[in-house]
Amino acid sequence: MSDDTPSYGFDTLQIHAGARPDPATGARQTPIYQTTGYVFRDADHAAALFNLQEVGYIYSRLTNPTVAVLQERIATLEGGVGAVCCSSGHAAQIMALFPLMQPGCNIVVSTRLYGGTVTQFGQTIKRFGWSAKFVDFDDLDAVRAAIDDDTRAVFGEAIANPGGYIMDVRAIADIADAAGIPLIIDNTTATPYLCRPIEHGATLVVHSTTKYLTGNGTVTGGCVVDSGKFDWAASGKFPSLSEPEPAYHGLRFAETFGPLAFTFHGIAVGLRDLGMTMNPQGAHYTLMGIETLSLRMARHVENAEKIAKWLEADDRVEFVTYAGLPSSPYFERVKTVCPRGAGALFTFAVKGGYEACIKLVDSLEIFSHVANLGDTRSLIIHSASTTHRQLTPEQQEAAGAAPNVVRLSIGIEDADDLIADLDQALSKATA
Ligand SMILES: *Cc1c(COP(=O)(O)O)cnc(C)c1O
Image 1: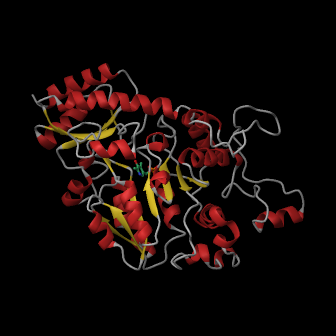
Image 2: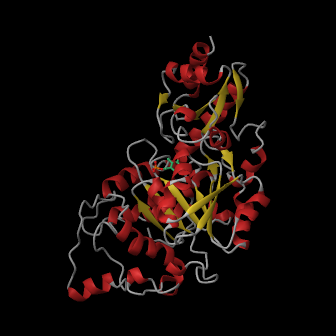
Image 3: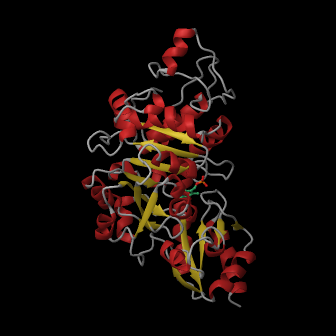
């Protein structure tokens, strides 16, 4: 299948995009190219590859044929021009920021983020001389006001972990656009099946492929997708992309690679020097999972809708945050941002608070108590005592991870079995 076939539907592309029968053997499934090095045809070929004058394989820290298929697959599903896979979702976030940032620069980010991201942005990136301003993305004036001359990106999650809140991607993209900076969307919890952020104006999309894209809880991985639409030279704010890059003997990435500048920079400088590389085995597992993405997501959403409705009607439950419920303030927004459904991740508050939440988690039989999401298996976690434990009570509240709520990641089992499991555990928790 050639690359210029955008007319195929999602279900076809999730199986075929980026892959072709192996040129050496005809193998129909993408082989796992378990190799670190690649033999150069001759010295001129080697020189051309190192000069980025010819595209090919040098060393698997930079590029690998199995990983390359996954990169093209995800880029196609997101409607981007290129993608760089990396070792985890957190690596992808650093890889997305790395070409944009200098010491002294900041990013404007949503308060509603995965707990690990709050810590990464709130604490760890300070060691690089970067900083993050946390803003409620439902307050558009506050987002506008937070952007200053040193802001280099705006960052949010399309469907926010843990509450399943929906971001108005278009409104935030317009604000970033007016400021001449890119919007980066973490699309992990939505996946391109439910939301395509680039169509709503995002410049970059990041993924933890650990979650739904792989889908079965086997490997960690990440990915940065570039829309190819941002003019890196226009503002003078992104010298690593628009000016001669000293880390690549003065190459001007924007001038040389046009819409692929960010992707080439991510490989030639990012992966080369940060080394956050995805391994070919990991890419293989994710390629296996991604083939059934649409089938799984449709079922995840169907189950989540049933379970959220059941929980909301139960008087042992205080509230349910699922954006697919008419009671949610995000219900209308779902129709434009993620028309195929509000995902399968949400929280609910148990009457009885912290203690009841702990008892509930310990009483479930099908749901596993796991710090992961996007598995075929249903998972539950008490965020305040685990993933969001490092946060202050105010940050927990703002992130939707207050002590009286638990987060569900609804799997693709029989919905009736999941409801029965929640029913018996709620009885024990609130007895
Ligand atoms: C899990 C997760 C991450 C981090 O991904 P890892 O693969 O665990 O590094 C980032 N964002 C969201 C929304 C996540 O759920």
